[in-house]
Length: 86
Image (cartoon, rainbow, N blue to C red; front, top):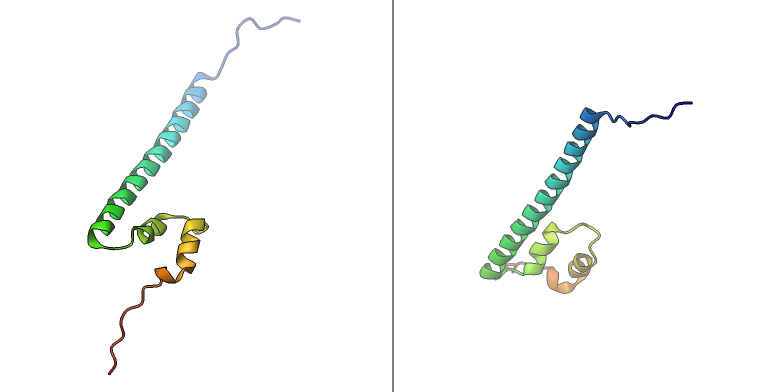
């Protein structure tokens, strides 16, 4: 039985998969960084306008975020408009 002296890899497949993996990692990283940057700009705008920044943060959060669930259930987060009596 003869042992192989050189291991041959399918080079185009390995290179292609590596490039796809690196592109996916780069894309996810770029998406998350730009999402956080946009959130920071919106929070700064909310602070400047007098809007509660936690409500802006919660608009970007996942639905199971504990802080936002507590914020939504608190009485402070329910901004009700003034009703005019006719």
